[in-house]
Image 1: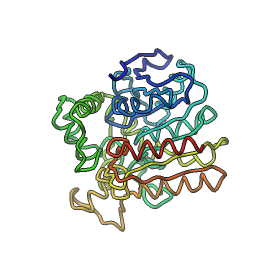
Image 2: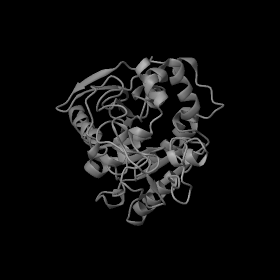
Image 3: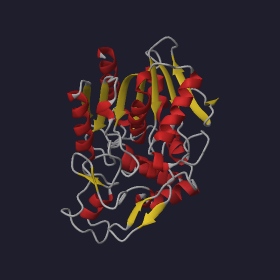
Length: 341
């Protein structure tokens, strides 16, 4: 039996969350990614409940948390500030923070803003520290104009329509096609739970996916200023200062070898889709190379190590959600890391 949803009022918003585990054990907070919610973590929380005190909140505009508009010009700071208000209300002062995909970006932003409260950071297939889309090379050079080929204008419109319509079949195909390995079969009860999580994404003004700006340069769209997807645009999202945080806690980076979302060849990166012939008018790889997301993350984490931090990279045979299709491998890597940190 999974834990019921609880709610916590903070000065910023009403946050829905799930709690599990054993009080007095090490505290672990789990952040979900884009187009998901804390429901994705419930099976993992059940498995880890004897070793940790666990909390998984729903970020604003996801799950059952309050759906307030997001100021994307602050990057991921609206999420980070929400999280800090939440842990203050929860009474947690020191904890390990795990973030998946966009949640990994929020975890990095939280380390930049409130790193003194963290014991360790676990990045699960995180977005690049240079944002999602619109950059090239290992050090995150930006396409011009800033925000080009990133943000809400690059979102699959079919997904937006499916979220509005509550289309369970499309949500299921998204999970099967992008979140896990192609041959991995999610148990039926979990699958329904995960579909609920995807469809909990709040579509609307200032929420998912956000606004956009039309431009003359290919692919003719730049990130806007509000909404979920624009928070990750490189013109607003820059997490590359992570190596300079004063208190460098141990970092675990876990990702799948078959990730189609966060990859050096991402199926959600417009230039890579253009390279494949799936987006018309592509100007060519020399003019518009795909974003090397993994290389960029590795570049920043190598700097983190060079400046006194410690980082461990673990690659599992998995898709975008390694705790979903290689739960054993993920749990083994997590426990080993935390025991040795």
